[in-house]
Amino acid sequence: MRLLIIRLSSIGDIVFTTAAIRCAKEQIPGVEIHFLTKKSLKAVTEANPYIDHFHYHDNNLAETIAHLKAAKIDKVIDLHNNFRTFRIKKALGLPSHTYRKLSLQKWILTRFGINLLPDTHIVQRSL
Image (cartoon, rainbow, N blue to C red; front, side):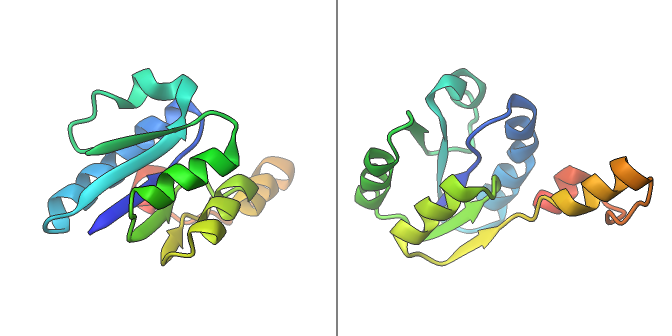
C-alpha cells in the first residue's frame, strides 16, 4: 500500500509528524510512505528514514496533483487540513483521513480561557 502523508508547512508541525510517520511504517506491513510538504522544507524531512518517497509542493497545485497521481497513491493522511490540502485530496479522489486541528477550541481557550481541548498531547492526537 502507498500511503501519502501531507503536511505542507511549519517546521515544528513537521517535526511533530515524525511520530505518526514512524508508527505508520512500523505498524502497517509493507507500507510505502510518501510525504508531501513545501519544497522550502526539504531539509527538515529528507533525513527521515521512515519516508520512502518525497514530494515537494512548489506553489503549482496542478503540477503537484499530476505528480501525485503518477505516484499511484492508495490512501491519504492529511495532517495539515486546509483548503489547499482539501483540493489535493479531492483531485486525487482517494480514501483519506484528516487530522482535526481543533482551531475553534484553541481560539476559545485563548480568547475566553475556556479549555475545550482534549487531554492528549498534540503528537498523540496525530497518531
